[in-house]
Image 1 (cartoon, one colour):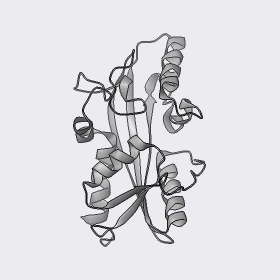
Image 2: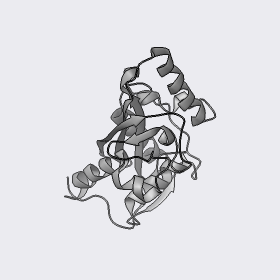
Image 3: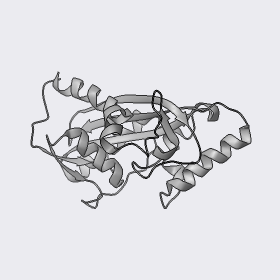
Length: 200
């Protein structure tokens, strides 16, 4: 694909999650002007796909068509091996209508207690999609492996970060600085692939 993203272009981040919008803007490293879909008053589309990549594309295309801007969307979530990969694409929905991730983390803890096993392996997946209004779209996926533990630790990050410790580290994503998390996160790994697809 030829270079289609010009530095300085205005992009809409197809999210209403302030933490996710911050991370997407940080990944872009000042190359683009980022405005969140929530700031533009765009509706959140129903996530009807069955994969992270499918939902990322859906959100990017919806935001691009509604705003007339190139859209960047992320669909991400936590998968727990002992729970058969759940919550997976339903990660946000486990937080309920109020998007309270303390509820979601408690649900993970409860489900694991019901299984009564000791498998703590988990992974975060991020699918990133860029879509042009009425035009093409590109989607990639990144992943970081780790373990979950309770009680939650740390006030940084968002979502399930306080219960996820990446392999090789002692701190949870919730305890890490934004810079430390951004250096190794699933979203960063997806963005490296996106850069390769769009620029290299």
